Image (cartoon, rainbow over all chains, first blue to last red; front, side, top):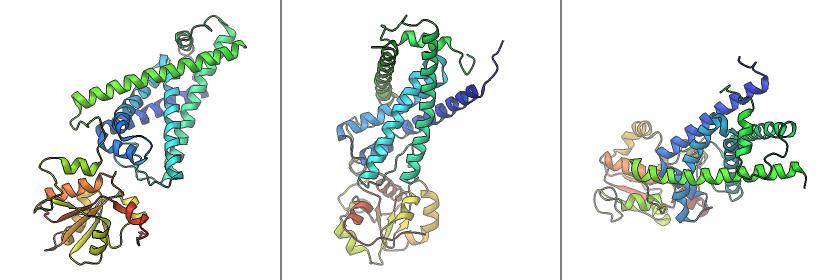
Length: 176
Length: 179
């Protein structure tokens, strides 16, 4: 029998779908034009040239991987954590560019994004808020389960498997 | 240490390990994609766009020979600024062009190249005109790519200014903005 949808569940589903869609699209667009993305990274002048292309090659798959993981029940927390870290990274990079008065073309979605820096920062903050909301929700679910159920049972296992199994045992917003 | 703090520590550790694993996996996927799938693979070491385009065979060369593109400096651009035989083309995105561009420049953005080209084709094809292309700076590949597209359309007299708008602005030279 299916569970009734709460407002929280609906928000969770909407955010997961939205974030996953945005990051998967952004990752694919960047992978389709790695040169442009590498040039954008280089323009921030934060990485040595030897690392620019490696960053340009690895960030898009990380976005896609995290986006896909966000859609799957077992890895929601990891995916939300990864996306939050990515948003913090992007935010830091954008703010450093603003501080150094570098004009940026973030290539966030492949071809040059022509949004002004302030709008890029606002967009990034919104994505960070959404991914943090999902992450904290997942953490809270695990914490609640631990305190009411198997308290202390897995506290000495650093692998995270126990936490994932607890997440799995929680009602999944997609009902999977 | 309370069980809550142990739990949180374990959680953060687990999530960081997950991030590290995902990052390593992504690097492997990215390298594999670049090596085996991508139609335009990049070298592992970054090459600035102008160097990359200029070093590619059968595209552009810096020799200045007929049919090739020549690289010019800030001083060269200054001397050509008011000459009627030089058309200055801004390859930045339209929004950046609107924010600021070289005096007298027209927008020929990479993203809207076909449309911009049609708009300015008459001026571009004026006999004896030299086309001077620039972008925001040396890390902006649009200038080189626009020059390449112009070459493909048969233009022979193309100058490329790698320093771009950034160098021009840093030198304190006059700029224009669109409203």
